[in-house]
Length: 368
Image 1: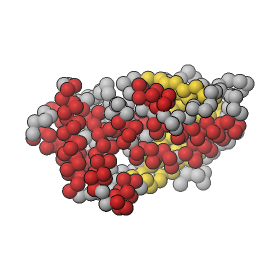
Image 2 (image 1 turned 135 degrees about the vertical axis):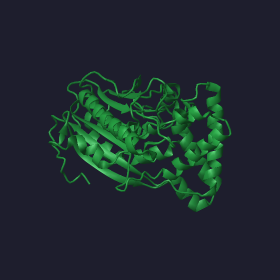
Image 3 (image 1 turned 30 degrees about the vertical axis):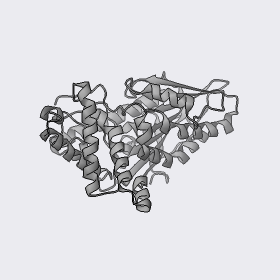
Image 4 (image 1 turned 90 degrees about the horizontal axis):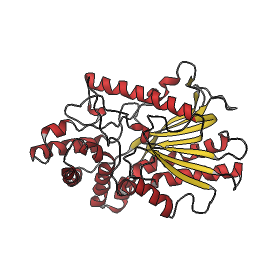
């Protein structure tokens, strides 16, 4: 089966759009903050005066990283003191909007280095499906929502653009790619973590029944794409190539690599849990009754996160912007006809590099 490669696959809409509209990932990340703080309190620290290294895998434009990095640094300061150097390295693909990222790190009122001269932010433009750091350089890792993206798209999806809308051999191709990518991601992070290091991973998840919570949004967007073909805003061939590499996983899929003896590539599981994430936009709508605000938030969320990947199948760069505008407006109209909450699910996983004083088991009480 042919492999599809998209150079901008998984990159969010630039110009700060992701920072403005990625409230759902921000909410999911906030659920994991207690686990990140615990990881910062328990991870092994480098000896001597060597800098403590925090890796932010999949930073995008940086706004959603500020609170987690601030929380981690605060916990590390209680252990290492205020003078110890802390390096925070934000990692994302080379096509990421790093200008916005650095502007956030420099100007945002909530920036984590504002009053701490011993914190040193930096960035690396490289996929986390490659080596990002030299071996055993990372003390604490954080990856929020980014690992939902596959390294490549294994097949076109007839009639849809999401793997959850696929069946048969197409679904099998996505399942296989997801399993391979997950093992690759874990192997690379195991290589980069120091012994005793911790990695906290936050992912959009699937319920036990296989639902993601985003089905109403995805199905509405899929219907809009069909409209855009009928109206010749996009061509049929362009539509067929529109596939998202986002692949939400079940808890069992996350744990599969650890089943043999509780470890994988020197990593062991300290925690793995599925949380419900209520739709904050829907909660606000129930209070204020503002339908336009609700559908605008849902449509802007879809555009900021998913439309850049969809539009990468359009060769005409100017046409991509027209496509994005048309899709957003039509999506708003369709969503207004049947307002629906996007209550979703969040997987929180904490991994420890073998060699720490703790030796958690896959059957431990924290795995629930």
